[in-house]
Length: 282
Image (cartoon, rainbow, N blue to C red):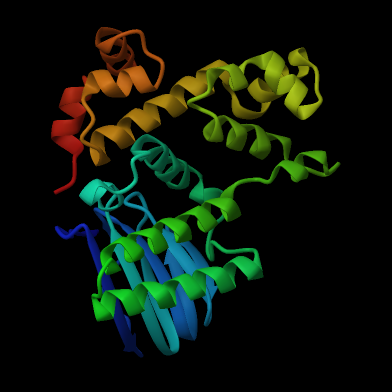
């Protein structure tokens, strides 16, 4: 499978075609794909999704995809790395931004295909795209800042559509397992919210039931799931951030770098440093 690389932090690509000429591929960057006209099929990670005008797709470096075009299709691609929104002194809350990006990276599979379910949000994202393209084309004073803010706002809206909303917890036919795992991913940096007692109160269930239910459904304990998810986040930070290993360990609750090294090696068979050297794209 081909891997496309991009050395620019941010790039816009617009084109219309009746034939898709790219092989099945993945990327070393993120893509937001806007379908501006046409229809066909988008194949993402071996899953087929019909596409039409107005659809929006989010592709992460972990995804591989291709298109099957049925009628002439106009595409607009926004291609970016996580470093883009941290460049030029933008976003002083960089940790919060990267955590949001991690959430999207590891939760997007809960909302496959078109990432927008709310039609009002679709209108907002379309309007943001128009502003972003205008500022990118005209390059006026503060255009770069406006482009960055538009992209960040789009990702905020996409995140809102991905997150399982709190009101859904009250629905009697809810998918409890999906809600639990999504809640863990959302609050992975707030350990007090992941304690069994807090989860029991949040989901209006007994502490004992949550533990038994989770292990029966997932085949591992809740604490083991939390650890495995932290290890996934460590991998993400090693691959897509410039954080030191000690900084990554501190952010995810490890006592020190030695503790992180020992845990990572136990489950991944190599040190974090070796993983970064072997797996980092580009």
